[in-house]
Image (tube, rainbow, N blue to C red; front, side, top):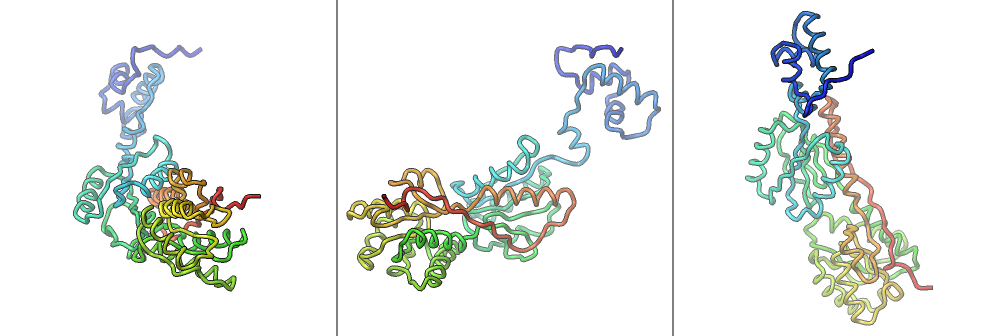
Length: 342
């Protein structure tokens, strides 16, 4: 019958094992990791001592011996964390809670800071890097002479040999417009962010293409402006003046939609009875705080982060990273702002 493990006041360390087996710490380490040359009798004595003491190897220490640090870097230019944090949470889910740590570095869109953080991450021997941001516009590659794999998420590299994962902004515009048409709306206006943003242009393109398929055109002009509630309030007045018969508004962000909702209410237009309203982002503090709660498009940022992390793990394991741009489908989240009263 096996003897019970010896009890110690604290978890047994490799030093305890070495002392119990009457060998050096280095010899104990080699025996426990199956490395190095030694007599079978010595190896057996170390293993027996480890079992007797209930010794459990430290996974991090084992990883370092194998040349691993179980860390990855996440480099972002999204100072507010509005987009990078959901991406990071999705990445952490895929990396495994507590198994691989993520170092988050905010570059504030400064190339010098980005280079500094890149150097620091490599000095810490991270095993891979995810680059993210708050815009989907192509950005310069962080380099191909790096000793670790790199994946871009919620942004894309100008180098086609890099692998980038971005949301389907155009597809999101299609989803929003089809939903409004399905509720019986035919005079759909569009208020969105700056025309210089690829996301704003793509969402507008999704709207206009879907309306055209139905033989319709946008109500009034497409209104490009800012990603803000204030712009939503101002633009709603412009739209109501240009197209008084508007019966739906698709907004390029939830912030804009919340501002639009305020102006519609002030002008005596009921949401959704008179004017249906759809936002974009599924930013819950905005969407649920809107009156009424806002139907919106979710970019699936968590899924973008999870995909980025999975590809990074594959690359760390030695599999080739794909190249090009992968687009993640958006999803519609229906709420009260598009439901007609019965």
